[in-house]
Image (cartoon, rainbow, N blue to C red; front, side):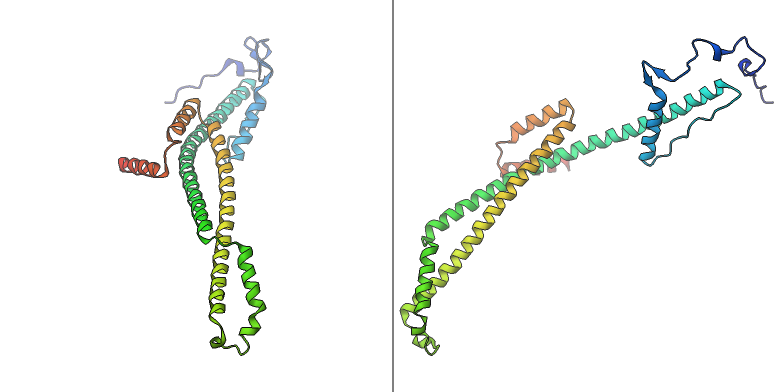
Length: 252
């Protein structure tokens, strides 16, 4: 047999001795220290809806009982706050995981930067050796070609290679060699300038990403990252590669 339902005395319209709604302590508005609690709850509900969740709707008003209405509002607010807290916990976990991924990206970018620095230095060294080995100015090469073109009719009257003197063939080959060498040199030089621009852009992007990542970290994590940066800043690319291989081997 089901237990008899207890009738609340304040639900009786004839009962006035416990009419708590007329008490001076009964809250007329949901405000604490000037803060509008109802507005905060409403904003939380909108935030949940924006995240694609389905929060509970507004509490229904019971015209027969102010108590039931207030109780439903309290339960409704508690449900919304619980959902918001759960959502914020998920976002906190996501940010923590993202921070770990960003830290790994920073390490990869450091290694990539060192690799680019070494590649640029090697290219500069190669270009310097090329300059000293060729030792032919572009103006000189163009002058040789111009002289050959001016006297071309003398040697190409019947367009037969047999009529070409040895000197013309020799200087023609030298001219072609100079043209090919200088064109290759110009291409290498242009590529070097492009790589320098790419390196500067990569450094700027890396610096912005590094600053943004450091701001997202907690103080303890930020100090740890700074210590690691000081530790690894003098490492060569080969040393970083060996360290990476050792870490991967230890994780297996």
